[in-house]
Length: 242
Image 1 (tube, rainbow, N blue to C red):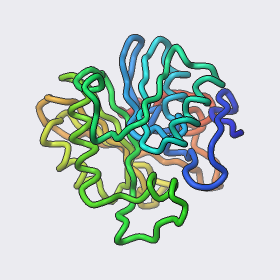
Image 2 (image 1 turned 90 degrees about the vertical axis):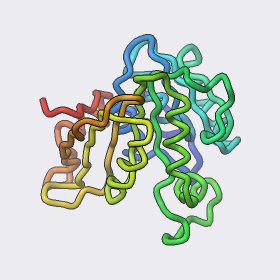
Image 3 (image 1 turned 135 degrees about the horizontal axis):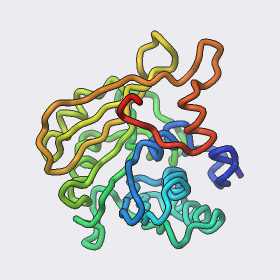
Image 4 (image 1 turned 60 degrees about the vertical axis):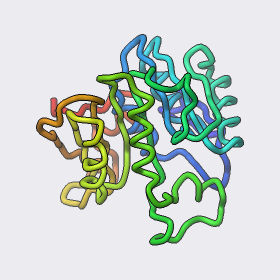
C-alpha cells in the first residue's frame, strides 16, 4: 500500500509493472475541472490520477477507463478504499474504441499515454508495464482522436507526455483542438525539459500557443515550492504564471 498526496490517499498497486509516478499527480493537478464537471481518465491504471482529482475538486464526476482487467480491478478497490465510489467509476475497455455512452459527454479528458516507441526503446518484460509504457505505431494519434470523440464541444483535453514530442502532439491536436497551452517540465534550472503537459480545447480556434516552463527540483534536489504544494498538498498546477 502506497501513500499519495502526503498519504491523504492510500493506493494499492502492483509491486512490479505499472506504478504511479510524479507524472500521475502532476497530470491530475493540471486539469481545470470544476464542481459538476464530467471527466474521463484515459488509461487510468490503478486510479491514481482520478483519485487525486477527485480529492482536489468537490462534486466532480470521473470515469476511469483502463485496458488491463487486473489494473481496472485494482482501481475499483482503490476507489472503494479511499472512499470515492460516489465520485469515480471504473470502466474496463479500450480508450480508442469508446462505447456509445462514453462519447460526446465529457467536459474533460485527462491522459498519460504510453511514452515510448516500442521499436526504438528497450521495453519491459513485465506485461503490465509494457502495455502502459510502450507505444505502438499510431497509438498517440488514436488516443487524441478518441479524446475528441469523448468530449463535448469546448471540452478540454489535458495530457502529459515526453517533451521531445511536443511538436508532434501539437500537430496531432490541430485536427480537432485549438487554444493550446503548454507546460514544459524541467528537472532543474538550466536542464532540458523531460516532460510536457499540454492542454487544448475541442472545436476552438487554434490561435496562439501559450507556453511556460516549470522547474521541478531546486539545486539541492528538493522539490521547488510550487511542486511541493502539488505533490504533498494537492494544489492545482497553473498554466499561467501567477
